[in-house]
Amino acid sequence: MELMSQTDTYLQKLPLDYKKELQRIRKIIHTHIPSAREAFSYGMPAFIYKEKPLIYYAAFKDHLSVFPTAFPIEALQDQLKSYKVSKGTIQFTVENPLPNALIHSLLNIRIDEIERGNKR
Image 1 (cartoon, helix red, strand yellow):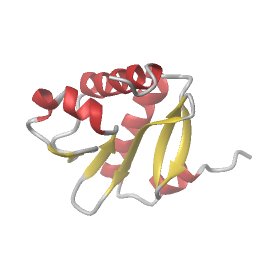
Image 2 (cartoon, helix red, strand yellow; image 1 turned 90 degrees about the vertical axis):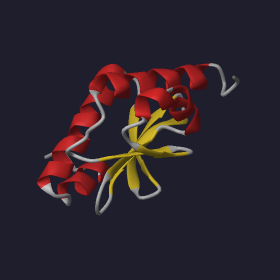
Image 3 (cartoon, rainbow, N blue to C red; image 1 turned 180 degrees about the vertical axis):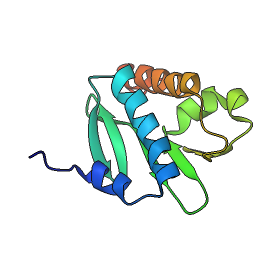
């Protein structure tokens, strides 16, 4: 019998619509970056790439969030106008989810940043 990961346990406790949306994001990350490993940090699911934080994701009372760090948000600010953003966070809802292509772009920018050693 396979043990449930902390991420599985976290997702299991969520309302079904939140759970499905975060599972969609989790699958996109797994598929797009198979070498990224799952982690659980700051009380939320995360992915690590080359021992650096790639992206975190979480559910809150009235929204969902991804935390791709600040630089990807700065780089894609024009595509994020319909979401609430702060320095390292993008808030969205099940009714207004992040499109797959936008998630891919966030991941690509973050991977590039990690590859370059956080040098811009």
